[in-house]
Length: 516
Length: 91
Image (cartoon, rainbow over all chains, first blue to last red; front, side, top):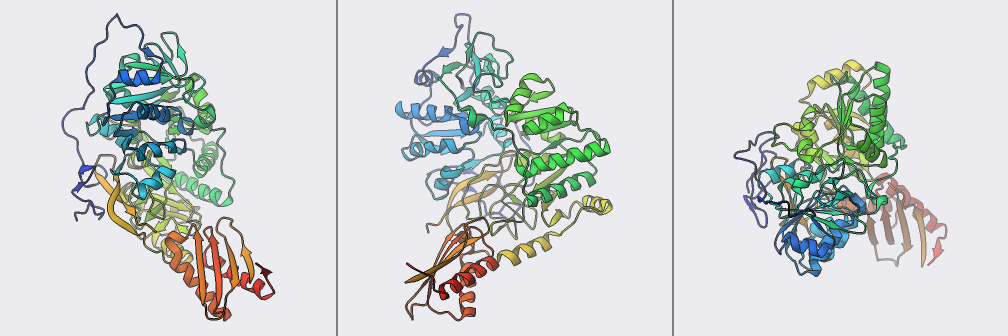
C-alpha cells in the first residue's frame, strides 16, 4: 500500500472518500485554479422580509433535498438546539442521505445517532466525539468521517472540495433581512467566526434566530447579502451550555509545575520581547501558562501584540490591563469574552478563513509567535495525535491544532507524562494529526523536551539556566519503565476516518476497531 | 466462600477483589477498567507474578482498574490477599 512521507499507509482510493492525495509536508502542496463560489441569486425591492417563522417551511423553501450537504457552526457549543431541531425536521419531512458538515459536534448532539441509524444522515464531515465517535469507531457508519482542522475546513470549501447546499446559521440576533450578530440576544455567543465561510459559499443560507430585531440589526457579523432565509425558533440554545462560567486556572500541583516549565521555555525563547503574540486556548494548563507569562511580562516590562483563537475572560483581562494590544477572536468561550467582543473595538471578530485557512493571502496563525497545545500522544519524531484515544477510538476533532502549530514560531505541547497508565509519549503514535516538523517542544512534569531540529531553543534554554531539559529518548524510556509494554490496538482493514492535513492531503487514516 | 478487597477506584488506583477458589482451579482473573484496552497482558503478568511470590495457586481475582501502574496493582493485590488470609468476609 502507498505510504505518505510520514510512513503512514494511505490507499490511493478510499471507498466513500474518493482518491487520496498523500501528505507531502507541512507547506508542500500548492493550490491551482480559482476559488469556488455559490450559485448566483438576485433579490429586488419587492422582497423586504426574508422571515419564514416555521423551521420546516424554511427548510422546504431552502430547496434542501435528500442527498445534499448541510452545514452548521458550533458557537452555541453544548447548548446548541439548532442542529438537532433541523435534522429532526428533515427526518419528519422525509429528507434522507444528508451529508452533515458541522464545524464541530458536542455531547448535546448525541441524539443524531438515531438519525444516522435511520439513514437521515449518511455521512459526517467534521469531528465526532463521545457516543457518536464510539459508534463510528465500531463501524456504525457506511461512509468514513472526514476530519479537517479549523483552517482545513474553509480551505475545503473555498477550493470546491466541499460544496455546501444549505448552511443553517444559528443567529443569536438577526433582523428580517438577514443581518446577523453573535454578541447580542438571550443566546449570545460572541464571535461567529466559524460561520462566515459557510455564509459566503453555501447555495442557500438560512439564519435561525430566537431574537428577531427591527431592520437593520447592529453591529453586524454576517451581512444580509449572504442570507436567503430567516427562520425563527423559540430558543436556539441553552445559555448555560453556550458560555461557560469563569474558566479557572488549574490547582493541580503537577499541572502547575508543567505550566511553570512551559512559561520558562517561552521566557527563554527569542520571542519573549515587545510585540509577542500567543494563543493558549481554554485548557487548565494553558491558562496557568498564561498566568505565569503575565507575571514574567510584568517583571521584565514586556508588552504583547495580540492574543488569538478561542478567547476567555482571562485574555480579556490581559487586554484591559495592557499586556496585549488586541484580541483576534474566532470563538468566545465565556461571558466576559462575549461582553468584551460586543464593547471593545480592540477585540476583533475573525473568521475561520482569516484565522487559519492555508489557501488564502495570509492567515492570522502566520503572525503567531507562541501556541500552547495538548495531545493524546506524541512520538519520537514529535508527531502529535489528538484524534484517537489509547484504545484506538476516534473521539476528538482537530480544532486549530494543525493550523496554529504550522503557523506559530514556537509550538509547545504541554501534557502530563501519564494519564492513568497511558503514557503521552510513545515510539509511534497510533494516528498522526500534526507532523513533528511543525512541533517544537513537549513540556511534561519531567521537564522540557525540545525537537532536535530546534538547536537554537536548546541553546537558549541552556543559557537561561532554569529550564530542565530532558531528551525524548529519556522520556520514552521513563514512560516505558512505569507503564510496561502496551498491547497493540486490534483493528479491521476498513477505514472509518480520514484525517486531512490542513491543505487537503491525507496525513493518516483511522481503521475500524475489532469487536471484543 | 470468603472474599476480601483492597484499593479504590480513584485515578491511578485500582480496586482488587479476591475470593477463595477450590484447589485445582488455578487463577480466575477478571480485568475491567481504563487500562485494559492496551495493558491487559502486562496486568495479567503482574497478577501472576504477585501470586507466585505469595505462593498462591488457586484464587479468583477481579480488578476494577482506573489507570494503576504495576507497582500499585501488585501492592493492592498483596493487601487483598493478606486480608483474605486474616479471615476476609463471607460472600
